[in-house]
Length: 158
Image 1 (cartoon, rainbow, N blue to C red):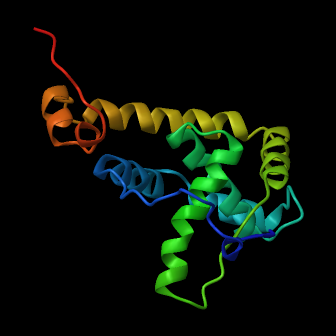
Image 2: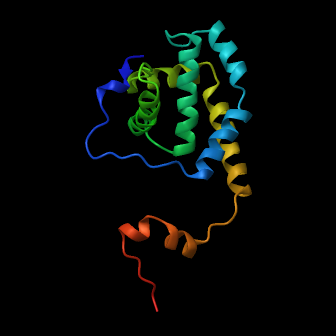
C-alpha cells in the first residue's frame, strides 16, 4: 500500500468524536464477522499482490464502507483522518492506506472468488439487527442537545 498519513489531511477538516452508536456498531463488526477465517484464507490465497494482513485491512475497509455508506474516495479520506490520532499518540507509527485503485482491485478480485456479496450481506444483516436494538431517537432532545442547534437555527412551527 502506498498512501501514507504524513501526506497531510487537507484544509478545513476537523475531527469529530465518534457517536457511541457508531462505536458499538464497529464493536459488533469486530466480534461478529469471521476475521480469523479471512486471515487464514488470505494467507493461503493472495487475491491481490499483498500480504494476508494487508488484504485483511482492505476487507475491513469494505466492512466500514458498508457501515458508513461512503464512496471509495470518501472512505479512504475518512480512514486517513482516523489514523492521524494514532500518528499523534505514537510518533513512529506510520500507517499506510491503499489507493482507490487498489481498493477497487481488491473488491473486484474478492467478488471474483464469490465472497463479496455474502460478506456485504452479512455486514448489512449486522447493521440492520443492531439498529433494531437501539433505543428510538428522540428528535426534539437530539436537536436541543446537538451541535447542529448551535450551528443552524431550527425554528418550531406553531
